[in-house]
Amino acid sequence: MAILVTGGAGFIGSNFVLDWLAQTQETLVNLDKLTYAGNLRNLAPVNTNPNHIFVQGDIGDRALVGTLLSRYQPRAVLNFAAESHVDRSISGPAEFIHTNIVGSFHLLEAVRAYWTALPAGPASAFRLLHVSTDEVYGSLLAGEAAFSESRRYEPNSPYSASKAASDHLVRAYHHTYGLPVLTTNCSNNYGPLHFPEKLIPLMIVNALAGKPLPVYGDGQQIRDWLYVKDHCAAIRLVLERGRPGDTYNVGGWNEQANIDIVHAVCALLDEMQPRRDGRGYAQQISFVADRPGHDRRYAIDARKIKQELGWKPAETFASGLRKTVRWYLDNPQWVRDVQSGSYRDWVAHQYPGGGTAP
Ligand code: NAD
Ligand code: TYD
Image (tube, rainbow, N blue to C red):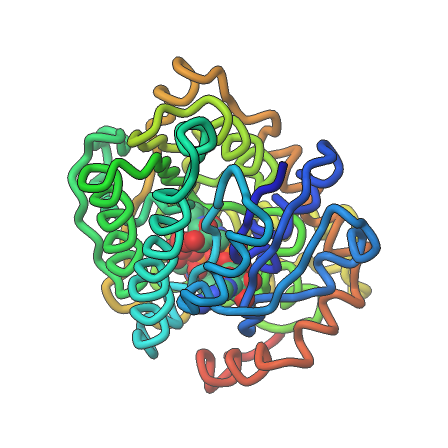
């Protein structure tokens, strides 16, 4: 038995791969293009694991995906591969269209061809699980009910629009061709191996480096944060027990304003690695220009996955954030490695003035 995972060198994908290989003996074929966000060091613990087969390549390469499918005969394909950073999608949407829409289409076509040729038993057991985001639903007003699976799609950024398009394609392949698909729409993840262009890891690494902590706008935007390992557990559960054609919203029941997240990170760092001058890391907070079209609030109603599949997060935000900060403190070499790549160019592009570090 085998599964094919795409994007397994990125943040969530690599956490999923590490957990999978720690928990099962089933072969995992990992197809990743290794963009700036793909980091093979994330997979160092499974380098010599014979159940892990890494292949560098593009989900849009239909011939390659077809070859992998016929060689390894997976019982499932899990699609994590995507361009995932909203700010990058605003600066340059083309890659988002290329991978998230066109790439997903080619992947679907390759999977459809493989699945159509399978004998009846393996064909009915087969699953394509598409990993998506809560951002497809758009922005909530204060007091509005959290996103349920039946909420209409209203994506606002090139990133969320491209993810919405891929969700629609996945849905259409079920409706039209009967492909046994599952879609998960998850809220903001955080945890180990998170590329420091996203809020929580950026705040940790900037704080430790004595740099400004750039908070967009008034910092009152709300996200629903989930520890990445809880997301991975939800994906495993949906894969085994989800109903083909269904979508499952996954969230942390944990809505927090950005500024509160930044203060929480600072408080943990004050405790675990205080600044030498005795002042708090919150000194480094710097309010910067807001993100264009910035969604105000996301919140997931995760009742369906709880009621139907029995999933709920194992971590509280306090325990998950503590583990996350600990991981970054314990892995300075990982941070140095990602910073020595294109990450540095990106930060210079996004924050040209850099703000002023106290
Ligand atoms: P990430 O940017 O850290 O990793 C993406 C991975 O996909 C990288 O390893 C990259 O090399 C790979 N990739 C990109 N284009 C590719 C292509 N054309 N072919 C093959 N591989 C390619 O992203 P992430 O945060 O791990 O997110 C994974 C998935 O989960 C994405 O689909 C994202 O939309 C979704 N998601 C993310 C979050 C979050 O908070 N990070 C929340 C909900 C859903
Ligand atoms: P991010 O981690 O990019 O995730 P997403 O945009 O997918 O929710 O951003 C989380 C929130 O933090 C979002 O409201 C934007 C905000 N943010 C900042 O205030 N400063 C930053 O430097 C970054 C990267 C994000």
